[in-house]
Image (cartoon, rainbow, N blue to C red):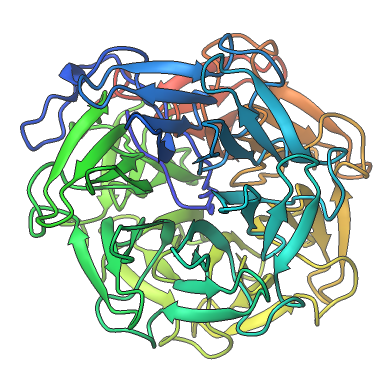
Length: 623
């Protein structure tokens, strides 16, 4: 099994990031470099290992988003033990433990939880959990998207929040929250999407910012912000999708970069960047694929989680050599690896983008057979870097948003040839910064959401010209925070998922006016937690959404905004969802869901909610 994503953002992380989990496999697995990961450590296999920290005795602690648990790893044997999670420890359960973990001076663990919008404290012996700061616990601004966490010398906690675009200081006793640095507090460039955070020896904060593609240094007293390293400051390879960050004993910074698939060392004075470890060209051992968490061990070696390898990796700080210390690994054979976006062609075939394969995969809707129709070696034109979402034009051409390249590709559905339809060099108008969702209007225009622009962008399908259709300055109504998926209703109205607001917007396609169609305050039913990619419109006008946090398909009434669970554990029969990522409506009215936890395409009966696997490693062949 195997991989997951940014963030995202998606994010989401990925989203998405991320969201962001992956399931496991019962197949004996190998990294492709002769390392049999099934032989490294016993205990529950890692599925979506993200955050990592090191206890005083040297034991690594890993936050696994899919297991919804904190896992302790024996540094010698690689054995894994769940310290805290369902059935381990008392107190409120994790909902969506975020991608970082830190250790307080008494050994207690602190973990941000994006689902609970809170910071959890975990007892390192019993695994008991308590919420120390969140809505109703502690005063100050509520968290909206807590991501990174670190412990200051005085015991207070500092948390990055990518939606608040802020660093928040948390009192470890009362849970009170105070903005330490944001657009209004402290001078310097505002944050884009702050994620990883670490503390330098002088108390300064260093932050990995995904949207700025930068390391930002923050004064812990004034909140002043300074770019330490980015494309303009410091030499070396530009950062692409920086996530976690740590400080070495000599003061150098080390960070994971999801886009570079590498560990990057940053000079704390000049901002110069160098790749410390990545693939066979830099360091020996299994190649990184999706490195995320990073910590410095007592001997100076680096401990890194790789979501794709489903493993914890030790990196030699001098040579960059990589050694798996614990994990069950990833299948390098045929089959999905990190399936995300999904669309349905006119003949009923499914097309799926897989960001680990960097490819478009066509799936037969009956047999489940898979064939790569565009990717490395298949089709001409520039290659994908992080294909995120896909849609089908009226003539059958495919359009793919590449999150890493900030580009919209057009793909020939027969030859697989790729052409850039719109990016910084093709088409006029504002450049994409973090394109996420894409849909096709009746006149053939494309509409694309961009989470950094906080906008819906209309793209001319011939010239690639880009025009802002709706943002804080164009159109009335509540502003977007993190617009993601988008769809077109029968009357031409647009519906947009806002991941951070956990809301569904309706947008007027002429004026750009925005209204909330469904959220915690609008419409009844279970609230969204992590609404993911795709908002297909059913024949009766109902909207269907997959929610990774709820592990469910949710139907939304287009008039009232009421939300109803269509399919989830307890609703409908068949395999439970692992991490549903995207959804489409098949030609027969059934729902098809890409699940990157199951690494499968799942068919859902729209009435009963019953689930059946259409295609995975055991169903369907690779052509």
